[in-house]
Picture 1 (cartoon, rainbow, N blue to C red):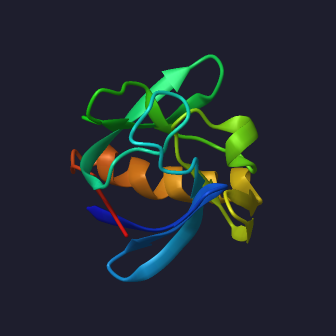
Picture 2: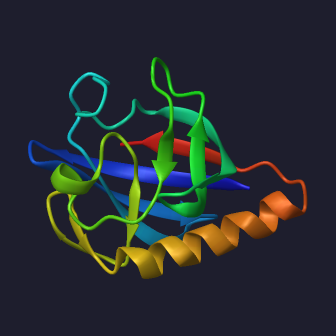
Length: 131
């Protein structure tokens, strides 16, 4: 499975469209691009594998693997990138500003269910991040 995250960058945050085979899955919000700095920047454009992960904070969620000089980059719910993200990607149902979205939990559940089906069938999930 290949997911494509197409980004638009703004000083206040990064907005994205997440698709699979050209079909919209959801939108995404991230921190602005600040040269891949820990906890203040979105991740670099590139190709990354996605795996299941569990934590007490987020329960079952998704981890984005192989991000250069970064770790624990996740897909998890958030509605305001600057307040709720430290480099992760938040799926949202609707974009409402730069790095701001609505109904993140709903979008995250949709994305997680789609990806977990593939991972449970031992299929790999590749995330292509581009602008």
